[in-house]
Every structure is written in structure tokens, then in C-alpha cells.
Image 1 (cartoon, rainbow over the protein chains, first blue to last red):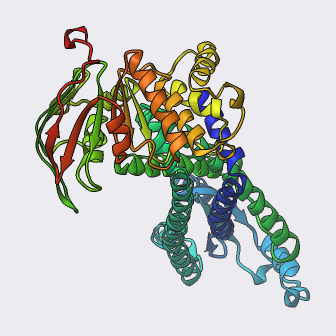
Image 2: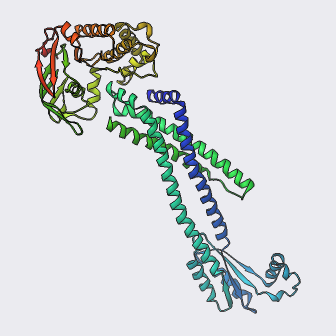
Image 3: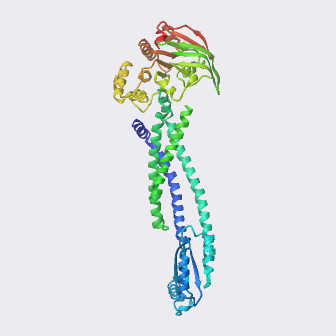
Length: 281
Length: 231
């Protein structure tokens, strides 16, 4: 309780330094938040594009319906397959008519072949997996051709890998910079009170007693800075969504984790700064 | 109560500060430490309150030895000592009573007892009427009285004073010295480093002179010292 009132006393006594500390934490985490926003949206977009990865197996004309049905049942039991469907010649034509204008005048339903449409489960959409499933489907005698946009799938996988690596590297860099800036801010707050710390030691305060108010102060600053950063990031996402491009915001868990990360950085930063200071005085 | 045995102190940057110092201060003694600047007076005081540890030899204060220190021992020792400096070292953003109470709070004293003890101490040093003032509103002499009140609030065995009158005019110096004498008369030992030869001459307290890190003169234990076995 006393530690808490000491921590609050520090806020009251140096409001400018405290606010400056919170603002610094807020903007450092805001930069991380903006990056996170970009990363989350790229990930969501890639996931939705990946969702469209499909294998299409064209069925030879005159194939008996029982054979096709058996194959569909068979393919549906593959562990990689999310769903499998049959597209008749008529369905194919209707789809072409609605999607592609130049097919509007084509009246012959036999113009396009019937096909089996296969969607894969998430985690099974790498080029190798898609290729393997396509090859297995191609082994049916009545399958004329199997297509899955090999080049497109490979490009997508490459983009995802690059985005993943860049995301981790940039994320680490942003987080490191944020930790350094926040650490420096907290160190300033500790140094501003070095006289008080030395007096506390002179009158017999234990290290734990001296440290506690600083830890509380760092934790509170971290929570407030983290909360402000979350608010700024949310505002940014609303503006981006409204004026630039459709953007998703963090999930609730991620948002809470972000604020907690601020609190932990504040707590650890204070602990380390005071610890170093206590060893020196 | 305070015993230095063959104490040598060497600082990494400035070299040897004390060489082979042997010293004993008994309960209730009043001891002046004197000598030129840089002679080692402050180092002796720092060794007493264990801000510094000896490079060789042993310092023993109130049963605690520098050769067998454990974590937290120094904090406990300082609660039994009162320390006063030339520059007062008060917390500028707290009132006089808060400054004195602070020394009690850090020891975890029951909150209910704090106001009474603070008020008693401020009365003792003659500042009861200024309890709610801030340090900057007080004269140097008054600030030093606050520092003394803070040093006494935990009822220490020894009051360590490092040039307590160094920043004060004659009148304030006399006032502070009189206060220290009263404190000593009530049984608290006082170890006071000073340049002020006038103070030393005016009293018959034990005087230890330091020069270049060694004791060059010791007038012997004061008559006012209480027998050691009481400790």
C-alpha cells in the first residue's frame, strides 16, 4: 500500500516527466502496433487468397456417373481435402456465362467439360502438397487433365514466406527499438530520483523497499502507454479502413497481449534500471 | 560499539585513502574527527555506515562485521545509526514532517505511531512550528535540525555527522553543536567530522586527527563515555 502511494506520489511530483514517459511508451508501442496492423492484414489477405487454392480435375466425356461418384467419395477421404464437388458441363457453362461475358452467346452445354473441384484444408496448400494431391487425382483413368495454377500457387507460397520472414525481422526490430526507448525513458525517471534513492538507502531502506514503488510506477506507465498505443492503432485502422483500404483490427486476445506487453516492458525496464542504480550507489 | 582493526581502504580511481587504521568508539562517546580535506575523515564515516567496505582489515559496528556481511545487513545497520551531512540531504518535495516520517516509514514502523514520534522529534530540535513547511522555506541551520531529527527518529546508538556545520554561519553552528551535545548527553554516541577547530577547542570531547589516511593524534576516550559492556 505504501509502495503504491509512493508510486502515485512520483506521478504527482513530476507530472511532466511521467506524462512524457507514458507518451514515449505510447508512441513506441504505436509504431509496433502499426507494424502489427500491417502484418495482421497481410496475413489475413494471404489467408483469404490461399483459401481459393483449388484443384480442378477435368472428366473425360462419356465417363459413367457411378465412376465419377466413387472417385469423388474417394477424393473426399484424402486427409488434405477440405471439400470436393462435382461441376457438370451445364454448371460449367453457367458459371462461365456469369463470370466471363464472351461465353454469353455460347449455347452448347457440351462445350465445356465436367470437372471435379477440390479445395484443400489450411496447412495443406503448399505447392508440394497441392502437386501431390493433383498427381493422385490424375491417376484416375477418366481424368483428362488436372489443373491447379501451379505457378500461382508457387508465387503465393513465395510471397507468404517472404512476408513471414520480413514480418519477424521487422517486428523484432520495432520491438527492440521500443524496448530501448522505453528503457531509456524509465532510466531517466530513475535518475531523476537518484537523490531520493540514496537518501532512502541512508535511512535504512532495503533494496526491495526502494524497488517496489518504481516497479509499480513502471507497470502503471506501461499499462497507460500500452492502452494509449492501442487506442492510436485502433484510430489508425479505422481511418485506413475508411479512406485507404479495407483493414482488419487485432483480435481481442492480441489487443490485450499488446497492452500487457507494455506493462511487462514497463515493469522489467523499471526493475532493471533501479537494480543497476542500486548496485551503483 | 565501533571498532576498526587494521583497516586499509583503497579506492580504484584515487588510490589509498586509509592505511592501517585502528580505532574504537565506545557507547555514548562524543568523538571529533578532524584533519585536512582529503585526509580520510569521510572515508572513516563511510566505513562506519558501510557505504564503503575496507580493502583490508575489519570494521565492526554494533555487532555487525564487514567480514561477514549478508544481504540486507547494511540496511538493518543503518536503522541503528543516524547520519547527517553538510548538505542536509532532505527531500525537497516533502514537508519537514514528511521528511522525518520517511525515515520511519522505510523501516516499516507502524503507521499509527509515526505522527507522535515525528512531532516529538521536531519539538526536540525546536521546529515543531514548522512541521508543514518545505525545506526550501527554512534556513540552513533549520534544515540541518530537520536532518538531525530524521537521523534520530529511529533512536540510533550512534549519530554520524559529516561536517554538519560546514554550510552554516556561527550562530547556526553553535545551535547545531548544542543540539548534538544534548543528543550525546541523552546517551547517543556522536562521531562528528569537522574542520571547525573552534568547536573542538570549546569542548573536552575526544578528538582524533587524521592526516593522509592515518590517525596522527587521538586524545583518548572521552570522560562522558558509558562503559562498553552495556552494549
